Length: 234
Ligand code: OAD
Image 1 (cartoon, protein in one colour):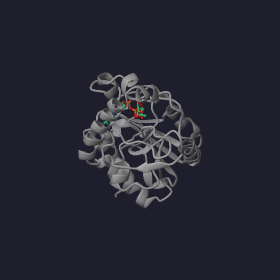
Image 2 (cartoon, helix red, strand yellow; image 1 turned 180 degrees about the horizontal axis):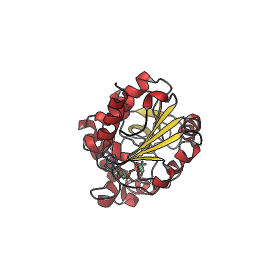
Image 3 (tube, protein in one colour; image 1 turned 90 degrees about the horizontal axis):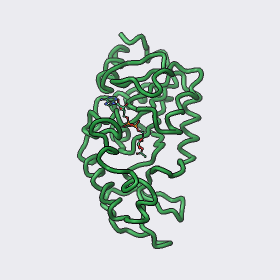
């Protein structure tokens, strides 16, 4: 037994990172097999790289889209969506760009780091959903290449998403952090805003921020979330 009775909370926030999608076959960023071990972000995930060589950067992102497109949400994503159905005030704040929460049925997902499935141009705040490869599509207004709507290294945060996340977390009575290393700021710091919430961390390992959490549930996300959900008899 985890000692956490999900039934007794109403304003649950799931705060998620790459570890939640591992069991869908999507690698994390850090650690063994991590994306940033194989690809140097300075070549693939920053505006300077895109300005230098947009086709190379799009090639990397299209590979990622192909891999994520073939993946399916796992039992962890499904539990998050199920909890939201039963407890409608539940909010999902994710650092993930893969869209798997939404594909599992979660709604109003706050995407702190953007999405692999949207594009934008620097000349306008407008975003566009797209699933087709985009190697060389240019902006109708300014002629620049459209870029992924992802918060790359050195990019400013999306303020609307950050504000929405802060509001949800400040109001939370339970915050469940899942599969994040807690080393990328400002996202890593957000759980500290949940001052009146019970704090739970789900991760197979200790992280840089484990000390903030009163409950540390060690194991793969799908397993731990499924057993938490079973404990409430769902
Ligand atoms: P990281 O790759 O930094 O951390 C992944 C975490 O998932 C680690 O703490 C692992 O221990 C944990 N993990 C591994 N397998 C797991 C499993 N089966 N269940 C649960 N947890 C598991 O990923 P993030 O913390 O999400 O930015 O990284 C934060 C940001 O850094 C990302 O959003 C990304 C990256 O640069 C962008 O894409 C813009």
